[in-house]
Length: 245
Length: 268
Image (cartoon, rainbow over all chains, first blue to last red; front, side, top):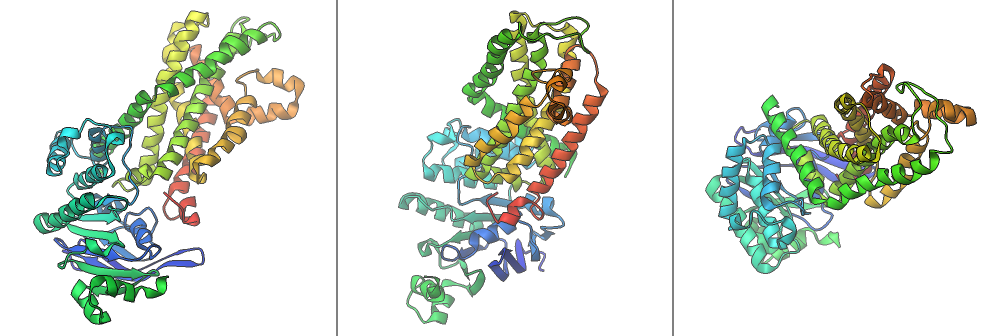
């Protein structure tokens, strides 16, 4: 493994009983890189995320985050990780600030630093003025922004986003997509973004196309088009996953 | 994992549980109403029909309201423990639980912290109940109210650990109704909360044996003795052993490699 790798996945497999959800998956994500984990529903994206976040234990293969083995050095590895899950994980009955302070406490941030980081991350997303509002009062797009701010509080080396734009309107989606891409470019954060929406891909992104638990292609959107002989990434994606339907 | 990190995480988990409790006023009211109904209605009705001879820790004849109060404190903690496990199932269904489980701390510590937070929430409920009971005439010796605190922490942890263990098995919120029927009611009724053991033995030796080995009985006895400024070593040891057993099983239940979650391939 390269020491500068933010995420290193080697030969990872996962089965639910007889059903194989992931089959010898291997890839890496580097600092400053935005990697798009593209796959249709049921491809294994959420299962892979459950392994990377150690909700499930890795039984076959190796996962390392910022050089720390997730199984043997789980606390150090998870300390370098920021996660935005597909389903909102904010407490709707607490304020934005209380949710973020709770997360900062879980990551062991001193209270003074936590407040400074909360202000910094919320201001960056134009949400600081709404910090005292209950999460229940926010719309879906704003909740997502808060979740991204929360994931960034402990200054992670790797940011995981599991279909964060599902259910959002187009302007909210665009805001989040642009913001996350700027994070990888400007703050040198490694991003792994799981999605099935091809319009969220930038030309500079590296694609990891997952289908039925195994990787079908790794490379740029242009490489995907060249390999499949298709005119655009949407057609290339359909070509690579066409037996999904 | 440093000590200061653990303390900060513990502060966060306890603060969140307290904030949630403060925001749920109806939870506080219902936690009080339930034992008060038993005290004002059930105990008042039973007072004349149930004769109680002096048994430790009581030095003289007591009213049934005095006898039942430690059992009702146990009831508050039992329901609170189950409420905490209900919130764990809810958190898991709604996804909030993931935030906790992916934080960079060992899972056993996170579960213990969650357990401690639930227990802390139960303490003001108990003292509020005792405050009302005081004005109703149920008055323990004043030092007993202080001696009660460590007993409450131990019994609260034990009952919370049971809830935690149950929550690792319950996949959906809807299944929680079964917990009421198969755990809370049998535990409460097959215990010394309502009648002393010798009274139960008169009617059913089998029920007496079940009540004796019921951890809830020992929790109630620990509370009963503490409230009268006395220490029941057997009840303390039994409650501690039950805590270790329930907590150990819950930690296994929530372990990402050994627990039920992975076996089911289900939600966390």
